[in-house]
Image 1 (cartoon, rainbow, N blue to C red):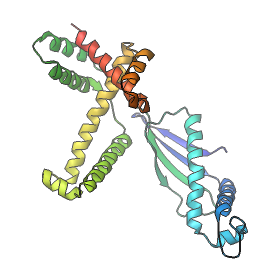
Image 2 (image 1 turned 120 degrees about the horizontal axis):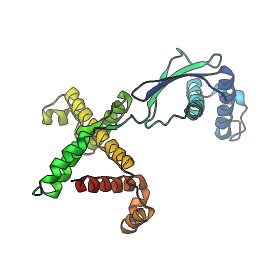
Image 3 (image 1 turned 135 degrees about the vertical axis):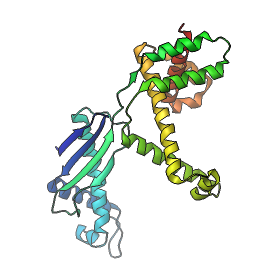
Length: 269
């Protein structure tokens, strides 16, 4: 299936895809979805899975079938376009249906927005500030680590795509609501207790998220520039000590990279 589409890429590494799902493909997938429903359909007078398609069609919600058709076609079309243009999205796309009413007799036009990792630049002033910090031999290790992290954030220049920022803010708000519900609290009660409004809380989250991205991407960029690589033996050693971490190898690689970067920066004089 070759999907008609238009790709728009912005400097902040976000991109928008307007794609068209053709009526012919929609009708073909509709019949496929209908067949899947037929296989488990039950109605008096027919054995399970033996009802004719027209009977099945008369007894199900047309809208639910159309939604299922979209769920089948859209991921395939999106993956095809991403591969064609060699995009590397780092967040799930937002989806906007531009066709006023989805029907089997017309094309469906949709708009998807996502983003790749933003470009990262480390300001050379980072090394200057790190050298100054390393001259003070009286700083406790924990405090020094925190100050190094702050300097990485300060000197990592990135423009975070708004979709990445919004997705992270919404995810953290959703996690907060679930946590509060488990404690029989509401978001309003939480905000009232903190004496802030929801917009103010969103601003706080945005600031935290920007710093988190700057720190994580900054560490990764320093590791690339300084050729600080993780050996397989190091990863296996961590897994041997903490087998549960095998479920999250990316976290292990990041933590090892983080430590190597910190060790490197602390060694600069």
